[in-house]
Length: 251
Image (cartoon, rainbow, N blue to C red; front, side, top):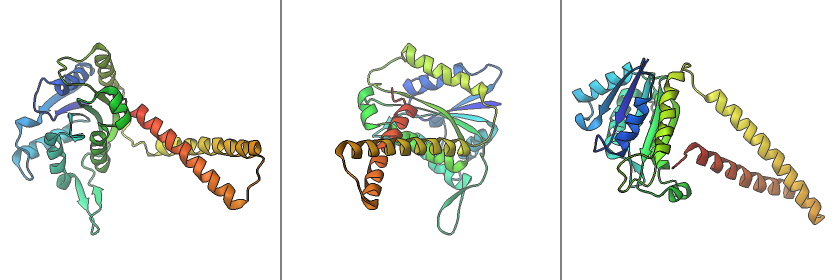
């Protein structure tokens, strides 16, 4: 197994670099690892440097991608790198829809980002969401499987990571050695979705029955249907929001 750290920031030793270093430092020493600083390369379509980077991606089993969040999105350095990978990793059908070539199928990845935004503000507004969404969209299109992610908020003036954040990143590094299967999580996601829908439907029926009984009302088919859909939608949207908050720790 080999782990490749990819740093897409302006500074090697900034907070983003420290986050990456902390994860890599806690990867099992028996696992080979390498770090690339994207600023060291001239990244353009068909450039020799891009070919070198693609070769490194092919050699590695796990990628740890680290990039700060700027203007509510992924850093330009990392975005440029991902943009240049499109033609090398995807084929486009006659409708312009992308299809993975299988170049990087079943590899794994970990995401790291940070921002100036305060922790509470990030929780409420999801300032780092766009960064994760861009990463995930690209990785999913290429067939790469997600292992985990971490966020460092409130980085303005921050010189060093706090012990709590270091512990979180340490855990991510240790997680790398536990990666054994190279399958996707599609079945798991469908099972999770089934149970979410089943639980939400049950709660909706309980609430709807209770409310109607409390008000002494008896509704017709369409009134029952509309009230069920509204309650179900509110509950499901709330559940998905909570799951998103749990997934993106944002702190």
